[in-house]
Structures are given as structure tokens and as C-alpha cells.
Length: 254
Image 1 (cartoon, helix red, strand yellow):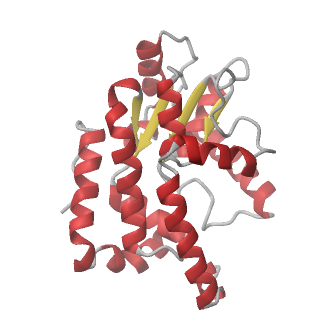
Image 2 (cartoon, rainbow, N blue to C red):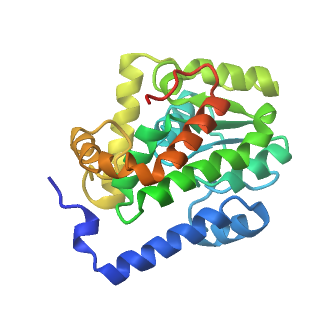
Image 3 (cartoon, rainbow, N blue to C red):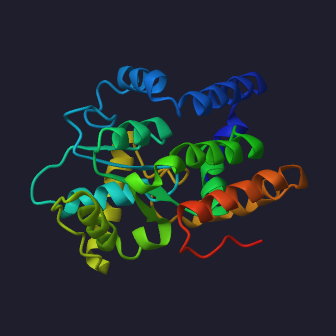
């Protein structure tokens, strides 16, 4: 198994990374502040950040909520290219899009598995930071709940076509639905692995956006941090937020 990046990083670097993480978490809910910064940072990644008059659809959510699968499946289903803003993992992107009336899917997953996977991806983040970030993300977008479509993780990963159907019904669009067959799902995973190799030079199990047995093991190794008594109130608040966003979903385990 590849050693965790945290183990390869000095304590000063970890402290700095945690500080940057906290600042980003706060700023990412403020469209007027965060989006201009994001546009500069991702200037070479055309379409990633919402642009008034250019973005046709926004598909975004907290990190590790089937973002890559949803975007890949959506684009794969379309007969022509669609400008999709995605993977910013910032409430600011969603708020800006819905204020402009742009069709938007907000992805949501139960907090425990989301946050554990997030902490594997960003091992310098403390449980308090990660849970607080999840809470801030969904509490920031919740006031706009009637202006976007929710893509709950289980439905996205089992019947994403129905999520696109609800998007079309809500916004009067006619995007092609993803045919959720085993073959098409495998095509998505294959495309995801290709992109992972292009970005990292190999399939990096810490980051690849598809099921990973190695990542599952790492999640178990840090679950005690998530379940610590000192963050119990935050866990409960995150669970309430999840239920508010996806009221028909199965409640998180106690």
C-alpha cells in the first residue's frame, strides 16, 4: 500500500496545510470572493468554474460524493458537448449558478463515508475541520434547495439517469439520460482511471474516483478520529444536514 502523504510531510507543512484548508472552507461559501480566486487558479481548466452565459449545467458537491462519476456519466450520455461546471467542491459555485437560473445538480452523500474518504484524500485535515467543512457546504446551499436538483449518492451510483430526468423536469431542459447499465458504468470507471493516470502518472488509490479496496482499509484506520466524543455534536449536526438535503434517504447510522 502506498504510504499516506501525511506520513511524508513535516509538522510545519501539516500546520500550514490545515490553515489553508480552514481559510478555503470559509471563503468557498462566498461567491463574490471565492469564484474570482477560483477562476484565476483554474484558468487552464476550461469549464470547471461557473461562468455566467457560458455554463450550461453545474454538477457539484462536497468532495467524495460521486462528483467524478456523475460528471463523467453525464457527459458520456450527451450527443453533443455540454459546458459543465464541476469539481470546485464549493458552495459558492452552486449559489452563483442557482441565482442565475442555471440547471444545477447538488451531490450529497451520508456524512460518515463522505468525510472519511475526504480525510483519506486530504490526510492533514482534522476530523473537526472535515466535519465542519461538510456542514458549512450544505448549510450554505440549503436555503436554495428549491432551486436545484439533489443527487443523493446511492441514486447517483445506481440510477443516474433518473437524476438527469429530474433535472430536465425542473428546468425544462432536454439533456440525454445516462443509461445505467453495467457496461456503461464500467466505461465511466475506465475513463476515470485514464484521467487519473494522466494526472498522477499512475492509478493513485488515494485519489482515484471509483471504489478502492485500499482506500476502504485506510478509512477504517481513521474512523476512530471521526467517532471521537469531542466531535459528537458536529457529527449530529452533519447528519441533520444530510437528512434535510435528502429527506428520502436512509438516515446515517448512529
